[in-house]
Amino acid sequence: MYSFNNKTVLVTGSSRGIGKAIVQAFAENGANVVINYVSSERPANELAESIRESGGNALVVKGDVSSFNDAERIVNEAIDTFGKIDILINNSGITKDNLMLRMTEDDFDRVVEVNLKGTWNMCKNVTRHFLKNKAGSIINITSVVGIIGNPGQSNYVASKAGIIGLTKSLAKEFGSRHIRVNAVAPGFIETEMTDQLPDEAKQAYLKQIPLNEFGSVQDIANACLFLASDEAKYITGQTLSVNGGMI
Ligand code: NAP
View: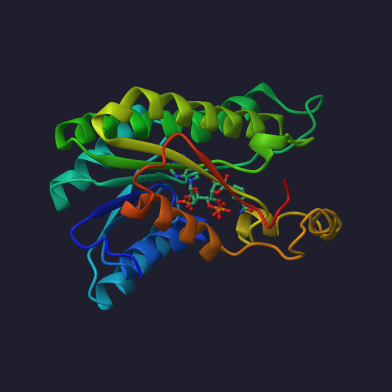
């Protein structure tokens, strides 16, 4: 168990999948949680309700992270409700896979807008607040493919590799202000995003995983708990791989 009592964590794209598990893990460890969604309104409200029923504090904010104005509003609503934000977890992400020869310019742009620009938008708005507080922790969710590349995902891989560079740069810009910035790079985690893959693709991935199983959303939540905790106070600018040994 960690103690995040009196801490507020904002997790983007957190009504389902990995984001939901992160929110639940932080709520179980005492944090006030801000749940963000763009289309999954009912799951977001149900998650907040279940956290409140267990004695926790949860706020739901609708917003598209690829919009700078929405990012600013998400941050402001969180601060208006809980007084401050201590931890930002940029988890929102989309895929629009295709080989480059068939990928449209719109599909490239949209994935980069949500995954990379969305992460930048949230970091930009929350760091102003962290500077005033003289503390803060950011965790950006990237991907194993952002490190090793993947055919058919040039848009997604470019966005996720960009997130790793963004993480390293912000760690250097803000380190002297006691703001830590790290990334978590999941491997193959069982969620709706990976459910879309054909069975042959899943079997091919499994062969590349030394631990011989897919990861769970809890595995990613556990990495986030550690990186956001005081136990990781000397860790910044790093990308923590959680992939069963894939790379
Ligand atoms: P998921 O189940 O598809 O969920 C994606 C989340 O992102 C949803 O909550 C969605 O919100 C939100 N989202 C999408 N567009 C958004 C936008 N414009 N603004 C705000 N939120 C937006 O995905 P997941 O598998 O949990 O993945 C979560 C993160 O982990 C992603 O960044 C993904 O790239 C990364 N990752 C996943 C895996 C894996 O194996 N699953 C592996 C490596 C990395 P709505 O539901 O409201 O639309």
